[in-house]
Image (tube, rainbow, N blue to C red; front, side, top):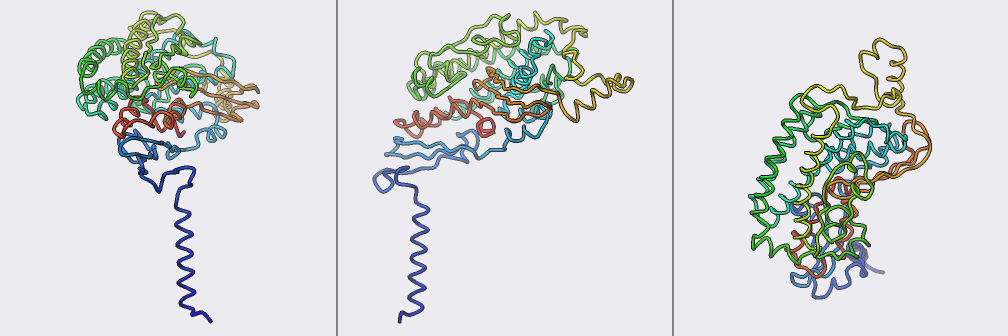
Length: 430
């Protein structure tokens, strides 16, 4: 009869062996795990991953032979939350997608709901111009931080300090317009929450003059810098056909030579009345993606200047131009009318408790956000809440190319490549 002690030892050894097998990655995932190659975790806590992104790298020396991005650490269930809220109540959640450009997220979502309601052509002109200004300020803000963080990853700290100084001025403009610096929630279904305050026009014009000088200074520091050129040219090359196959959008797509911009291809708001260029790259490397973003900021300045000239009612005097649609079943009525009119009180009560009454149907709307095409698919069965809402997050789609892109480059190149893709994990994971 076997000794009890021997049985316990055998059982413990069997359990340890089973646990070790469970902890080992599958052979098809890392076929060379017992060979000469090394497996390295980059992230999810790493300054150059720009958020909680984890990339499992298989290395042969310092050369990457395989890369497996792992996302989802910041998942909050935004799409499911939308099914339990009215269309208006979900607006603050869009701020938390690409939180470097909340104004642009607000506008894209509002345009999607307005397309479902069939009122996209009824928006007052002043509202449309205001939204364009907000989107382009958000684009400049996002690109400033994107280029600044990219440069800091590669070693150029001064650039980050310069770009962040300009972003602070945009936050001041956002605060005076919306009442908040970071999470603005400025847009409403059918319009915007408020008109511009006195003196805002002059502040925007002053900023535009200063940011152009800053952009020139950044280019002086980087564009012909030997270290910057060596770290970015010929690194992270994405051919035109591969960029299209992986569904890239925004500067990452245009950096590969594809001239596709939703503001030009499928104009919305008043972009068809504005003159601007769509910058494209030729090599599709990190350097091209940097140049595209730099030129996009200049084009955004050009767009805002045209909006300031064309906007109905102007900025210098209090405007009498409407900034919301006139339908009381969509926009909350003025407070003084709510307190004096039964009809307005009923509209206010139904809007707040039940939301706008959307018709049954399904729509998709995509906007040209700083990171690429931010799209919203809405399936409605009628009523004030969507039956299904799907967010097409450009950062999520752009990161899908990492498994194809990283192999063949060195570990240090990974930092340059991630910086050039300019993604935000809040939008990626949703």
